[in-house]
Structure formats: structure tokens, C-alpha cells
Length: 415
Image 1 (cartoon, rainbow, N blue to C red):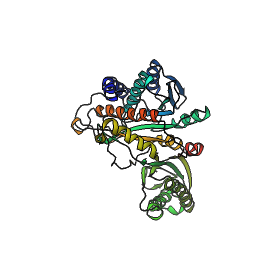
Image 2 (image 1 turned 120 degrees about the horizontal axis):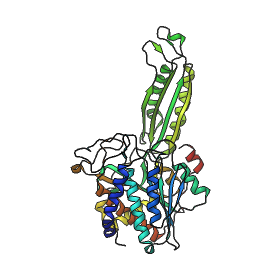
Image 3 (image 1 turned 60 degrees about the vertical axis):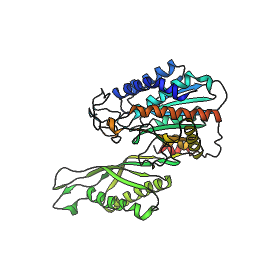
Image 4 (image 1 turned 45 degrees about the horizontal axis):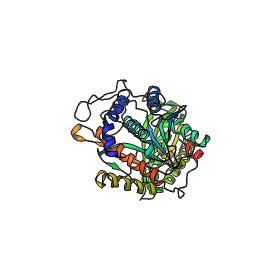
């Protein structure tokens, strides 16, 4: 298969897919039209589909010849962001038609790439052996995560997967390049939201109240010291508060306070230890101040870890097809988090970064911002590199016996 020529010919369709998804974004667990569009396209190419409630779509493409089974994934949800009509410097080539909803993370690009790859692989089924599962995942961003029912579906139906592949567009990586990190590629994340219950009172008699604000202040100061006291200096751990709400009057002590935030790590042991310490210290300080804690959100995403044999094969396949100039392997792990981490915890795999930055076109704003935009030429390069790797996998049928999967139930229970 002449990947370069075939993908260049498919580029108009790739761009059309991306612009369609960008113009009609849908929030997590509301991706009804998006999934209908994906399913219709897959089935029109002879790819059988199964829709998993609140999970997404599996499309199965079987060559009819023995070989390994590869799972390829894209996420499909958008964000509650009001899109700016301009990117960093110019008017956009397309803009969301759904007010207050925007593909501000690049999932429109992920879907467009995977659909294009599916179409090409289906059109050239006679040129490869094995089976491919295309996974379109709902609710990667928020709410009831689609990854849980998807992974449970595979397990409950005894569907065998040898290896997995995914990619994320990256705002700071130039279009035309991909980055393939060995080991940790994206951070594990602990998401928390807590309501502290106390006893309200008047500011003139704080001794007659049990202030949730005082409990929170002391707890927050203590937990910020955790990294210095309990984390190896060579390891990463970040902690941030994104929301604190309590009271509305200066001379009244409220009875409740709610706060939320995240911690990020590049080592799962560090992350799970922090989570345990977080709740222990929370209970200790609430008790000290006569308060109690109600846990509203407690989610832990594992670190997204690339399996070294997959990384080695991917770099070799892409280098052989397109040379080394299209790869940037000096990039550092991204401290954002990914639900694909669960998939890579259960199956050996690799997660690329696909470059989309082009400052001349105004593409280079960070993810989750209203000026985020994609240089679509980066998607073309992403499809080429993905196909080079997938075809090498299917051809070489590597042995993954050295991979030890995590415990599915314990991983998904925390997500």
C-alpha cells in the first residue's frame, strides 16, 4: 500500500469529516448525532457496528485472514466553551453552529483521522491480515465516562484484543510531526469534589460555630505540603484547586463549603498514595474543626503508559516510511490526563501525539480555550503515521506476552 499517495487522495474527505464534526459538536453523553454519523459511515464501508449504551461505538473490520487484533480509538465529545470567531490571528475556516459548545480539545480531529483510517483500511482489506476494532468513545471529558462500559463490553463478551492504538492532537507540536514517548506519555489524574458540612453562626461569635471555611483553610495548607514531604523529588505531582464556594455575607459563618480540583502524577503509586492521604487528612481536619466531609466526586485516571515494544515498532515503521524528520521524540510527557490510560492499562499499546500547530495560520492556542484551532495538514500527517504503524503491526504480528495487564475492575471502579 502506497500510504503517502492514498492518504493524499483521501485528504479532502479527512478535512470534510473534521469540519463537519467541528461545526456540530455535542457534549459528553449527548453525542447522539455524532455517533449516528460515525455509524452510518462505518457501515457504508462494510464495517459492522455495535453501539454500547453510554459508551460509544465499536466497528469491527475483519480481513478474513488469521492475524492479530488491533484496537484503534478516537474520542467524540466536545466542551462547554463559547468559540471565538478567530483563532490566534485569523478567522476560522469553520466554526461551531451549536452555541456554547466547541471542539476545544481536538476530538473533531481524532474522529476525522480514525474515520479516514477506517475507510482506507476497509478499501484495502486484501492487503493486510488480522482484525481491527475501531472504538469511538463517548464522554472522555466529563460526566459518566464512556470508557467504563466500553472496556466492560469487551470483557463481558470475551472479545480478544492484542494491542491498542490512539492519538491526541497537541497544540504545541508543529503540524506534520508526531511524537511517540516511551513509558509515561500523559499524567494520571485524581479528580475530587468535596462538600464540608459544619455549623453556621455569626461573625461576632465564631466560638459558637463550626466553620467549614476554617477546616478547609487548614486542610488545604496541609495538603499543599504533601509533595515536599512525601514525594520523591525526581517524581512529578501537581495539585490545584479549581473551585471553592462558601457563604455570601461577610459577618455570617456559613454551614457548608464546597471545593474541587485535581492532582496529576506520572507514577500511579504516587497518585494512589496521594489520594489515600487526601481523604485521611480531610477527615482529620474536618473532625478537628467539628465538621464532616461529603465526597461528591472521587475519580482516578491511571497514567497513560506506552508499552516499549510498541513504541519501538512505531518509531521504526514511521521512520522507514517517511524518515526521521516527521518525529519529535524529545517532547516531554503531557501533564493533562486521558481515559485512554485505562485502555493501555489493560492492553499493550501506544499513544501518539499528532502535531497541529501552525502559527502562520493562527493555530497554536492551548487546548480547552476559545481560540484553540487545528492546522488540518497535521491531521493528514497523523493518518499517514498511524497507518504506517498499524500496517507494520498487522504484518509483523509481534508477541505481547511480556505485558502484564492491570486489574480491570479496580481501574474502572475509580474512573
